[in-house]
Image (spheres, rainbow, N blue to C red):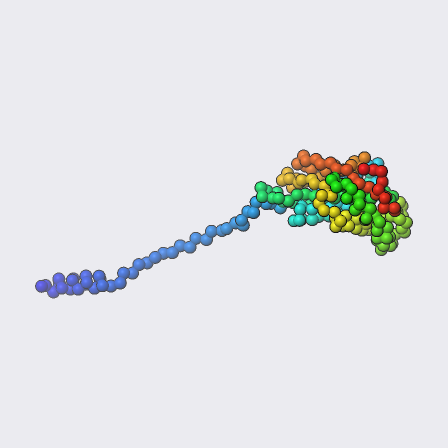
Length: 241
């Protein structure tokens, strides 16, 4: 056997016995994950109160609840006849195929002399009247305290110039709204639905000449309701529905 053949055979056997070396190239791919869509989108809208009565309305408060998810409130000291509140209210709500919430509203205000308290009363009218009378029964003392804190001469709910000073009026508006909201379930509130088209646009809550209230949104939705009224000094229901 030739030496060259032996050397080639040994080389071949050595190569076969040697461990097989494999080079693997690994590529890592990073995929950006977007937040999972829950089927709801939070939106915001602007709201103002418009006075179409023949006299000023004072201590105005508007509350909005999107079920138990969002709660918004705004107060205005005075809105003159034919005018709209310029300091708009911002409200939050959800839209989407999986939303189950509803928009609920409560508007309260006083006449320009502060002697009559009004509140929207869409469904449970008697319960709203009872709640108003309960609020009116304790309001004079509370209002007197607010007015004194603002340095305003006070008689009943009427201050200097026939209406409360702005600071006192805001305090009374918030007190009234808070007390009514704590006393009333949502069946005493007005339902008016905000939609996708209302995002960033203005909804008007209009107090009509007959003291009914109209909700008018940019989406075209219109809702109407009546108001209940009580005399503040006596805590008695007035003749107006």
